[in-house]
Length: 369
Image 1 (cartoon, one colour):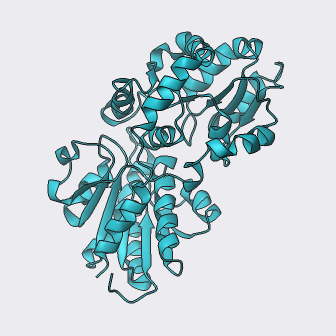
Image 2 (image 1 turned 90 degrees about the vertical axis):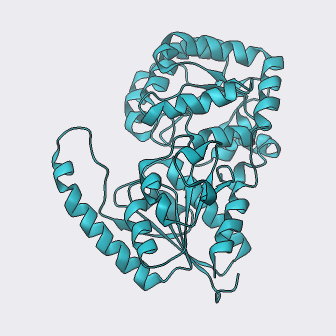
């Protein structure tokens, strides 16, 4: 690395936790190595990154950009205007910030920012989380120098010579959750003698998972299962109203969990969607998991993510359409089968890449001239 310090890094990505949290993990790893680095995020106005990035201690600038809807809407009619405005603003941001490298993790804002940066000759790196490449990253692939991926076979979407297998970067605080178990039990007010279930639906929540847990909540309560349940903000008030008459002494309900390290530390079993970031975190926390892939994603890539674990006897998968009927029974059976939990824990741990963020920083450093 020969560019004059302090290094300036611009990172763009968001819309969902699957894009935001890897971006933050990359920034944290870069700052650990270069404490005086100037790091700027660029996101989409109104999206979760505008809250989560400042919470992580970084400055973020929002672009007036959104994705296309599947039906004719006013938002779609405004898309060309938003795109032009975002490209103009992105160019202005890059010109003023003068980054040494631009990093894109996918999502609406990543497109204009990375396009502006590459047009201005800024070295650029993409980080693709999924086994099926996102539209923004596919469109940018020809313009960047490096593409960090988490799954094999990504040369189906990207130039093979640019691909580096790094895995998905995750929050550093989840890399050693075992030692945090006493703190986690105290935080949630749980007993160490009962089994604990963590229910996740991705950063936005998952209707099917919420409905499935609602359908089986009486059985979980009867079995003395301790439940940490992240519903997602959209579903929180509805779920809260539907459980108001139940015995919730062992149930902790959240719209969004900030203390994910403690949630993983407390859990014996996790119910989750099968987004790339969720799977990476499950691998690194060694948690037995029941995966319910979302059917509402491109090329059914969550099912492919889940099957990659199932084939290694590293997780259990239930189809979205079967979840209401089967999820609670599968969860209770797994919670009661400690030998199977241990086997799943051992198997899923072999698939983790704990050094992903550091490996991506290595690639960023190579691009700094």
